[in-house]
Amino acid sequence: MSQKTARSGPTVVLVGRPNVGKSTLFNRITDSRRAIVTPVAGTTRDTIAEPAEWQGTPFSLVDTGGMFGASTDPLHALVVEHGRRAIAAADVVVFVLDGREGLVPGDEEIAAALRSVSAPVVLAVNKTDDRRARGRALEFYRLGFEPVIEIAAEHGDGVGDLLDEIVQRLPAGRRDGRTGVADPETKVAIVGRPNVGKSSLLNRLLRAERSIVSDVPGTTRDTVDAVLKWHKRTFRILDTAGIRRPGRVARSGQVESISVVVARRAIEKADVAVLVVDATEGATDQDAAIAGEADQAGSGVIIAANKWDLMKGRGADFVKEFDEKLRRQLKFLDYAPVLHLSALTGERTPKLLETIDKVGEARNRRIPTAELNRFVQAVTAVHPPASPGRREVRILYAAQTAVAPPTFVFFTNVATSFHFSYERFLVNRLRESFGLAGTPVRLHVRRREK
Image (cartoon, rainbow, N blue to C red):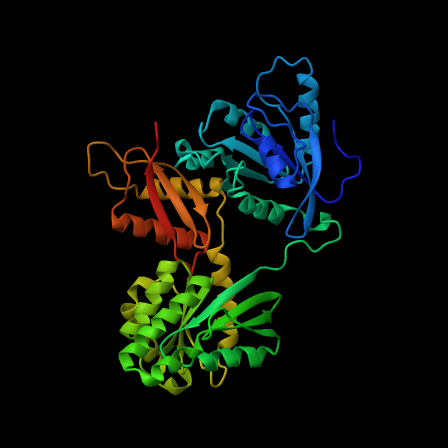
């Protein structure tokens, strides 16, 4: 076993069938040629290890060689024993698969062996740069592990994403004394029409919390980033207050169009968009246009009805009527929470930070595959999809393929699309069951390949 006796940091172990590209991936991550790469299955006999590092986090990467699959090698039993020991000691297991071949029985056997492993398992579908691999990565969700990352180890495509997922799953206490990955930031765009109180809201948030870390000029002249610490959370707030400057010499219509352009730039960077609406005016077509940009970009959305201090004393019926009218005007944002607040007085601004945190978390939530499929069984038992043709449409299984925003693929026996009403039903049930408030949810339907 060609392995260093003293290893620093946690251990990441590569497993998979022969010739799926484990050694190529090993060399790519460790920036070495330690593992011999040939087209002959079973070339790697030893279980080898090399130090690696990603984003300041060191770890030991182990290649288990050809421990899985048939072999005529007289030392194969020893290879298998070394591989089992490495897997048992792993902090993260990377299960490497061949995207060109798709899911084969050998993969199912390895998956069965890995289900008894206590370490998290990440699936790396290799060779996805080959046209024969297009669309086949989804097959591997059936193995029940997540996440599933598409890579091309030979060229390095997707390897950074894979390393991000690996490091995220490493135990914090085994990072060789380092803090590892920095606390993630939630990027927040405060957007809306001119004069609705965006700058006042930003100033209120920063002044009230008194925990601003820095003011950093953004990539555009009319956007400023402010980093805000709140309850061990980090928010990077993108203020678009400068959008009115170009309009001083332009017609009103041009001012409005500029507001959408600048809002779009901020939203493209943002995890959560706070749409500030003037409560004295209600939502306008321009608000709807900006909100549509956020929904299309996949940002989480919160509707902040500002200047609520001017609405005092109008009674509970007014509040209900206001919200109902707002929902009608922004009907495609039925998932977005509505907050009544005042940047002037600070009323309910702490609630805004709490809601930003919840929406940001929901946008990045990943549902375990087993839990998602229990949901599918329960929902379809009561309300199955419509069957317009002769054959009954059945949802066979589902997988979450992405976060930010949560994206799901439903595999069926015949259908490649659902009626829009049934799709809406599924999305609403997903929100209710898994707490996906404030975030767009993407849903795709695919017929399972025979």
